[in-house]
Image (cartoon, rainbow, N blue to C red; front, side, top):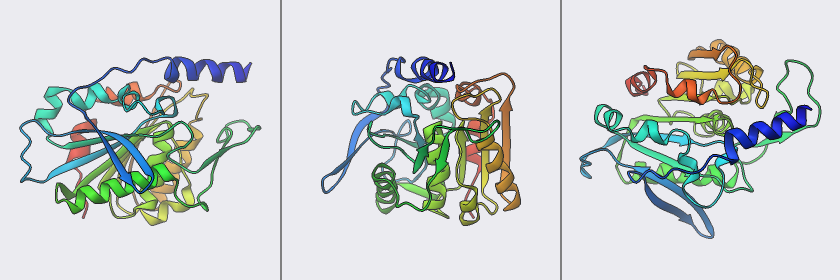
Length: 263
């Protein structure tokens, strides 16, 4: 029954959703040797190539993996492409796509899960960075080197697998990001000390999430509080895995995000 529920949720929340294209996001590829990262990039309205802008990295969930360079915009594309938001918060938005055989974070799954645990997830922080996240990191570095970015205003967020990738890239690139917003994800609390002190992080999760249990976010909140991070946590009563809908509907999300500046 539980396995059937998980399969159904993944179909309903991820795989069955048709990609809606957003023409304001240009299709691009980043290539390093034989490795390729597909990504979409949206520049500000009235973009001036002689100016620097804030940058937002958004990491999609497992249901949007692939090679079409479109599905990764299913969730979040409408938020960032909204012309009102673009006018109010001029910034560069990067949304990469992870291939089907990879993940943003180093995560393994087990077959057993005690009640109110981290589900069947294990964070393997002793492993090297995965290929897709490494390419994302290199792409960000190339944007900084090209002097397109206000380096004190670089942000990262993501949902589900992307929420886990958000926590992972924070410790893989400590001191790089000004703020983060992981949604229905989780991470390794033992790595919080590498990045947590004073960084603003707004975490979101659904109370009834059966796919990635809220215990994943709760323990990260506790670890971040202990490390003196500026952490906020919204846990939505009765909401299951699709808590990104609630997070994207938060009226202060973008206002809060773009107010942050790395010291």
